[in-house]
Each structure stands twice: as C-alpha cells, then as structure tokens.
Image (tube, rainbow, N blue to C red; front, side, top):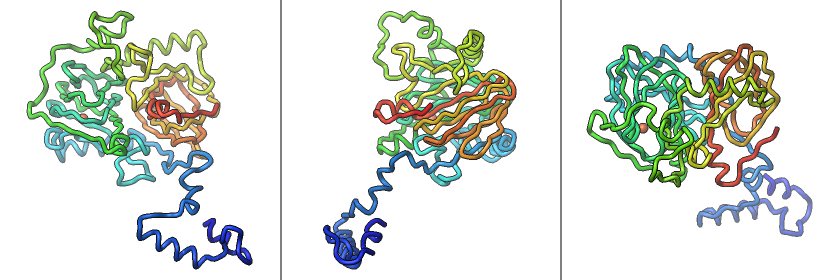
Amino acid sequence: MDAVTQSKGKGKAKNGGGNTAAREAYYQRISKMDLAPLWVVLKDIIPAQPKTVCAPAIWHFEDVKASIHEAGGLISAEEALRRVLVIENPNLRGKSRITQSLYAGFQLIMPGEIAPPHRHSAAAIRFILDGSGAYTQVDGEKTIMEPGDFVTTPHWTMHDHGNTSKEPMIWLDVLDVPTVNFFETSFYEHFDDEKQNTRRDDQDSLVRYGAGVLPDGTDTSLNRSPIINYPYAKMKPILERIARTGDISSHHGARVRYANPFNGGWVMPTMGAHLALLPKGFKGKDYQATDSTIFVCAEGEGTTRVDGKVFDWGPKDVFVIPSWMKYSHNAKKESVLFQISDRPAQEALGIWREKI
Ligand SMILES: [Fe+2]
C-alpha cells in the first residue's frame, strides 16, 4: 500500500518512487524467484503493538453439555482414541485451536470406558469440569480426578484415562499442539495395552514433592513440575487463606500460580496456569497482557468485560481473552477462576509483556 501511495506523487521521488508500473513489474519479476519486497508488508509483519487474530469468546457449559453427551452415543472413547469436541476460536475455525498457540477441547469419558495409553510431543493439562472419580495415569502414577482438579501430562509422558465411576465425566483439555506444530516437532506413539501399569497411587507425586522435602536422588533439573495432580480440595483453602489476610490483587483477586516445586517455575515450559478467588462484589481493574488466556469458572458467578463485550459466566463456563485486549473481572458471588496461557513460552523468549 505504501508503494502505491507514494507513487501518486508528481515527478520522480528521490528513491525512484512514482513509477507504479515499474514497481509492479519488478515485484512480478522477483516473485518468480520467490522474493518479495519487505517495504510493502513491513507494517503488517512488525506492528507497533500486538494485533491479535483471535476473538474473545465464551462457551457456556450448559449450552454445550448436551452436545458433548451426544458424542457418547456416536463413538466410543476407544475408537475415537480421545472423544473430544475441539473448542475453536470463532476467528480460527478449522484450525483446531482456541488461541494461536493453544488447543482446547471438552473431553467426555463414559462409565466403564478407557482411553488407551499414548504419548506425544505436545504437553497437556486437564481441568476437571463435570463428574467425579475417573482416573488419568501419567508415567506410572494413577490419579483420581475431581471437579476443579488441575492434572498435568507433560510432553512425551505416557498417559491414559479410564472411568470406573458410575457417571460420565467431562474435563477441559488444553494442549500446546499449535506451538509444537509451529516448530514442526510433533512425535506420537500409541501403545496397544488397554492401560499402563502403575506403581504409584493417587496424589503420590504431590505428597513426595509438594511438602517441602525431596526424596534422595531426585533430579531437580526437570523443566516441568513432577506433580501430576493439583487437587482443588487442596488449592481452594490456600486461596481462602490468602483472601482472608487481604492479599488480593486489584486485577486478579487472591491468586496462586501452579508451580514446579523444584525451582518455583511454571508447571510446564509452554503453558502456565493460575487459580484465583474473587471475593463477592470484587470489581477488578483493567488488565492486559500479551498472552492470550483461557479462563474457566470453577465456581461462582460474575462477568468479564473485554473489547466492548460483557461475558456473563457461571460454573464450568470457558472463555478466552486474546492477546493485549484490555479486560476486567467482576464477581457477583464469591468465585474461583482457573486460567491458563502460553506465558512461560513468551517469558522464555523475552517477549511477554503486561500493562496494569
Ligand atoms: Fe494424549
């Protein structure tokens, strides 16, 4: 566009501008050599501030629950490998992603079903939405999942799921698939066994590594947390304790970061998560950051204002705030919000930024 605009001037510019036809002919000539003029696209590829292609959007659980259950009658978890409805950002339809860097989906597992073991380069987390008592197994540890639990499946760890309870279970999956595929580094391996053998029981990794001591011989150089389940029943009292003492951010409420107990870092190098309690009547101040963020209401009721819209959220609703969009939370009832984003990856690259 700049080239065209400049070419409208009378006479020849110092740099030879003004000859649109000559420039267009030149662009066509160099195009045959797979070359292109930077000056035509410069402002688009290096904007002065983030220009997201994502839309802010919300998925109300009550609206999608019936459709998720309907999939239970159409395909088994074993046949599907994973029975998931992918949450697609309205501006990124067909790209299997909720943000440019993250995939998200609603996974359903019916009573008696198993989802067989596999592993892949992409890392995954589960945030449990509905139902109780199904399990995930990760590299030899079995964990029983309850609503609000934050379960991690780090990159290349073997994992499988099973539902030995009497009710269907639904959880939110979030994976760094678009990030891994951006780098073209995806590997995948399937195992034919129905489930892996486990040596360690529920909450073993939390007990071993989350109590301020470390077993002899622990490799603390791991770049992700060894804990595979951060149970809601243990996290919420921490939030209540923080809120009681008044340590409440005017933007985020009483918030904790899920941490790697070895070094205080994020749970994974590509994805980082928080859990926040917003007291009843909380009116959050505007906040913006470069990491597009997925939120889940664990409990409560409130609103989030973003880009001229107001999202009304309640339990199990999922919403997404794109990069650098200003937003603020209000809580009608005492509420707990889970959030996850690619912030650790951005921080590692030195490009994460926030404005408060
Ligand atoms: Fe998987």
